[in-house]
Amino acid sequence: MNKEGSAELARETGHQPATIQEMVDIATWLQRKGIWVPRISAVDYKNQIIEFEPGGKTQSAFNRSLIDLEYTLVGLHGTERNECIQKIKAKQKILAGRLAKIFRMIGRVQAAGVIHGHPHFGNIVFRGNQVGLVDFKLAERINWNALFSKSAGKPPTDEIIALRIVNAFTPDYHYLSRIIKPLNWGIYRPKWTKAEIKKMVGRLVQHYPCSNRIKELVATHILEGWFAEEIRAADHN
Image (cartoon, rainbow, N blue to C red; front, side):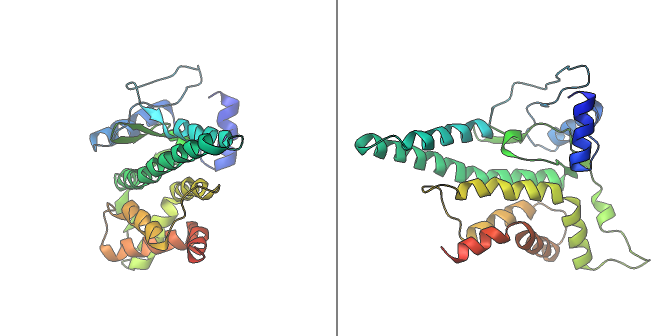
């Protein structure tokens, strides 16, 4: 990323991109926490790419192959069309199954005190059964203890703590909500039930270092704030 690109990113997100050293520190910290970080997909101002190890294929590549199949379907008929539909459904099943791992992994990243900033499909990688993250230019560390700190000399209520957590991880929640929306596009894509959506969000918050009551409050805010559209769609399925 050049200086102009860095400035543009800062204007769009309201967040100053991390330095190369900050990205390395965050990635190394996550590795120590047992989270797979195959490489940093980032370029410094001298256009020097830094990498940790060869990574797996990004989820976006998998998505493109699925989209290509759907475009191909338009011009097919008879047996060829049915075969293409079966390939699409098989890929959709894989994609839906991966969502559970994605939400759980992002939750572990957040529990480790890291806001990734933009966990979209292009920054999520798979290798075998492993799921990991790349591109930490918008990542930052967060102190969980600060989320439990007193306010005006008084201990915060569970609701206040939940709101602090939600505010801290808002960028990640935004992108996670966008991850499942493409799955509702097209004739053959799966439709989510309320139970499935709630289960995905439950996987996200399950590793948070707080009480179950606070996790429930956080999950409720996430569902109402970022997944309301999917919940409404589930009501009409």
